[in-house]
Image 1 (cartoon, one colour):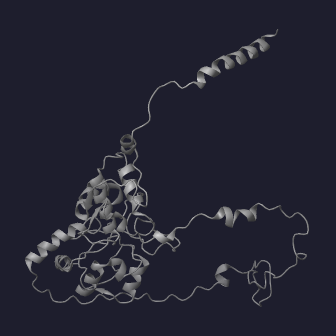
Image 2 (tube, helix red, strand yellow):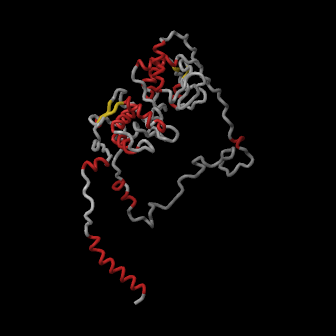
Image 3 (cartoon, rainbow, N blue to C red):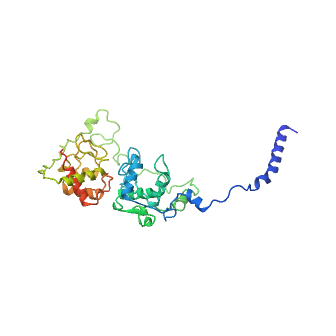
Length: 358
């Protein structure tokens, strides 16, 4: 008997003798207890299944977010560097470059809670407590203008929160709607209803170069691009005229001091005072009385640029309206902050900004 046949026979015998042993249960381990499964299962479903008991408010969430999340996502969830923006983007999903955030895109609040509690912060997953997760989620709702600053989120009111894009998703029906069209037998002969024929010529579609007399031509070696295309006369650019600043009135020092505290919510993006420069947002020295979108060197959104071109000037009234609801006052601008809901906070901030000369 050859060596190869001996090896094959030995392998077969080993398989036959080992099969009964491997088929028997080893008697090790036990079924996991429900509380053990619960300790490991962090998933939270859209219907609230899996939610832990707890609560967290917006202000606490702002503090926790600043400590554990802002280094990547910014103080106001505006995103830093290549880290994703979490707030804003309202109404942008149909744009060529949509801004997909918690407020504009995510359909279920449970996804926010699940992801934060399971995977955040980066490099420190599952170090955020249940109450801190509720607080961070509440802060993200506030940053997207979905709740007020005194909102408290808990397992009891969690399902009451409806996300703006909850109806923007649908079941993938391609298996029934599209796949049958790609699985039929391919046509190999006489597939067209008629013989191919020319329907349009390039000259008729105005994609063929022409001679100066209008007849189709190949190349125009005797002409240069400068001779064919005459530059349009340059139009004088309209120079925005800054409104004359109103005489400075005495401002309540206590109001200014209160505004300085409110400005802490703005300081991550905007700078004021001596040597202030543009940051995530434009510097705000001399903002009162200045035309919108007129700070040199800052790239504004098209919406704000259009407002400035239309003659909008930052006075107390326009600032108050913008600070109350940035997205509502000038739709599609790129400011991520949800706004200051309290009139006294807006008045204090405007008083504080009025102290800084251009």
